[in-house]
Image (tube, rainbow, N blue to C red; front, side, top):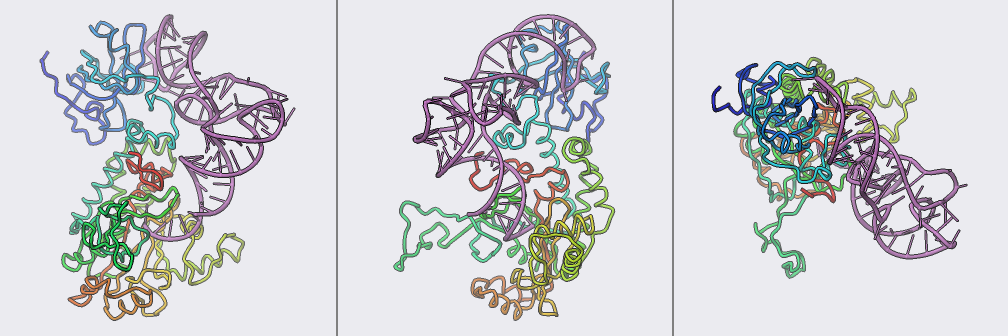
Amino acid sequence: MPDVAPTVSVCEVIGGPGATGAVQAGSRVEVRGWVRTRRDSKAGLSFIQVHDGSCFDSVQAVVQSDLPNYVEDVQRLTTGCSIKLTGVVAESQGKGQSLEIHAESVEVIGWVDDPETYPVPAKRHTFEYLREVAHLRPRTNTFSAVARVRHCLSQAVHRWFDENGFFWVHTPIVTGSDCEGAGEMFRVSTLDLANIPRTEEGDVDFSKDFFGRETNLTVSGQLNVESYCLALSKVYTFGPTFRAENSNTSRHLAEFWMIEPEIAFADLSDNADLAESFLKSIFESLLAERPDDMAFFRDRIDKGCIDRLEQFVKVSFERMEYTDAVAALEKAVASGTKFDYPVSWGIDLQSEHERWLTEEHVGRPIVVMNYPKDIKAFYMRLNDDERTVAAMDVLAPGIGEIIGGAQREERLDVLDRRIDEMGLDTEDYWWYRDLRKYGTVPHAGFGLGFERTMAYATGMANVRDLIPFPRTPNTATF
RNA sequence: UCCCCUGUAGCUCAAUUGGUAGAGCGAGCGGCUGUUAACCGCUAGGUUGCUGGUUCGAGUCCAGCCGGGGGAGCCA
């Protein structure tokens, strides 16, 4: 018997997703991880479930009572203890797993001081409770699965863009642009709050601040990424985004991650094509790479999640003009469907309308295109009808809007007119306008909320449970 | 920010018309078992979110505050 056993992951031992197959029955290995449960048999052995996060399932270690530290250590193990064990991988005699580890030694690395107070014992917990122990919730089945899915989708995002000729652009987190216009912003400042410098007029004197001007956390990388788009043709951002809106819903976070591709020499239809093939691809990757976690979400969280994704990657998105969407809604109202908000051309679609369109009307993802110009941002391209802009929203059943995007206004005169109409100041957009002065091209892009995408994929109902440490109004504990 | 619901043991919840708190899970101890949401028995554990009020008496009624959840708006 060799003295050294190679250290391997639980995933390698039990042959989970992505395992290399290097570990077979008969291999002698070392495994490190945390105890999920311990079951004693008075026949003189204990069963320890060990997880290390490398895949969904834990591995069962079978420990005989003749180990020297069986009584003083092994029989005192409780949920959450960290251990290092060596042993031989073997076919299991019991049901529930095919392979297990017959332990030759068990070393306790870290005890759980007081099992009575361990916040995540092996029992059911509500998600609300687990948010209060966000530092320990990744040890639960659900949150380790969420973490792996998050990683898998993140990698799939970068891989897809890379393989399709996109460049990842790191747009700034701190922005001096006060004109991003996508909601309330968090101020970034080093001014002494107890002693704020004032101008002669009595206003806050931001020239004394760190950047010599007013700065905030970004609400979108779009304006910045457009400049790289008009040089590198196909670009994207993927990073944190901050909104200081006082939003208290299962779909909003103050800090969330957003994916924003931007493509040059492209129109709204190209944009919708991009959204569709991109989304399909990352979901295909998820289905292929995390069957263990997805099976868990199907069994315990949302029965339909796998079917839904399999459908999603097969079926083409429904595309619908805003005008036709409103017509469909009006027709529904005429035949008895009740909405809290009235429907007519010119309104922004309410959540209930979007839900009806995607869930009732077509039953799958839908791209709504060409919205009235008055309800959309200044930078969206004005259509020839002069009433609508080339905007699009992708709506998904159960989650609502996951993508908002548009073809951008590339004509300087029209852009200036729109800035004017919106009561904004063209001076503030000098560099953005430069992009239209010097070699402008039609271009388009969109923003995809990463946590919402995860919610759609997993069936998890609240975006607060899809980001490791959620930030919401009144909550930034961890 | 608005509307609704909610706050009792470590966790999830009970407590009849106001009469000073119970269960399940978890934890500890013991029994049993190649066990696996294990099972059986025993034990410990609560100034009922906070402050004030009504009452002989408040978990229960009232007011304010704080926390949590759901929905709306805003959006991703």
